[in-house]
Amino acid sequence: MNIDIAFWHSKRVLVSGHTGFMGGWLTVMLKELGASVIGYALAPPTTPCFFDSVGLAALLDDDVRADIRDLARLSQVVREYRPEIIFHLAAQPLVREAFRTPVDTFDVNVMGTVNVLDAARNAAGLRSLVVVTTDKVYENFEWDWDYRENDRLGGREPYGVSKACAELVVEAYRQSFLRAGDVGVATVRAGNIIGGGDWAVERLVPDIVRAFSASATLLVRNPAATRPWQHVLEPLRGCLGLAQGLFGHPLRFSGGWNFGPGREDQRPVSWIVEYCARRWGEQARWKIEAGPHPYEAQRLGLTCSKAELQLGWKPVWAIETALDHTLDWYRAMIAGSNMLEHTRSQVRQAFPEPEELLLTSAE
Image (cartoon, rainbow, N blue to C red; front, side):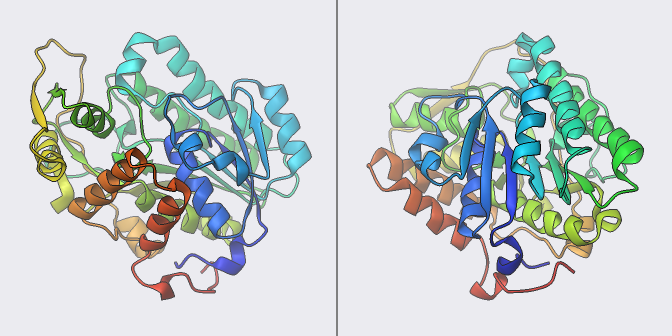
């Protein structure tokens, strides 16, 4: 399924979490496609941040600063703006933060999703709703094969469980309130995303950039852990294609979807750190951080054959290319480059050939 420029032109789209890393990149992509975008989120969670680096406020049709847990405000915005498509990305997205603030994590990730679904079920004109969760929604058995969309949901730590609960919320609302209508509802379980503009604390690539740019020693807590690393633009291409499909064929495309790299790009943390250190230069140093540390799965992997077969989606960039683009983004920011133009350039490069941006049907 190619990204249809004609489809997206002037579409009314609401993005929750637009001030965050993934939501910010999605907003840039939508504006490049000519969509009308309203953002709903709290202030950017970090300083610096992607939102300010690219001047995202100037691109938006409206920038609503409000809490996803405020159902009355969210419902008002949905009624007034009448979005045709909603992308829900507002969340507490950090595994280790969830150990420190489990109540807030469940509140934001579960009840925030409840509020989005409740506002959506009465939304006039809504056709597509895409809820982004995580690859950590699956109950992890530490087995050698990758997780499929019909594998068991669950987990052992608050973040993953909160997102698994959000998946159940989506399915309950879809079956109870939205199935009989014209609204397609899907969840996206994306692998570990990387890319320029992520400044979250205790996330690997931002920690790498902070340490290496300051000539400090990077502390790595779990070097043997393997993750399905991918550039943020990969699952976002999937989100766009999925929203197109839901718009025209809500029953066909509703449900859960994995977006992740091929098995060859599922690499251990130590490999990622070593590659970035070589690319950064001689001042890059790292060592293992002494424990104990909160529980984290040792291996995660996703099977994405459903997206490949039904959406025609597949990764474009190998892990090396994804890391190169990521580090180049941070270096450009440090050098004072125009980060909106740099970001737009990477968005265009995320499509393998110009003909990928074709005027096609949502089929």
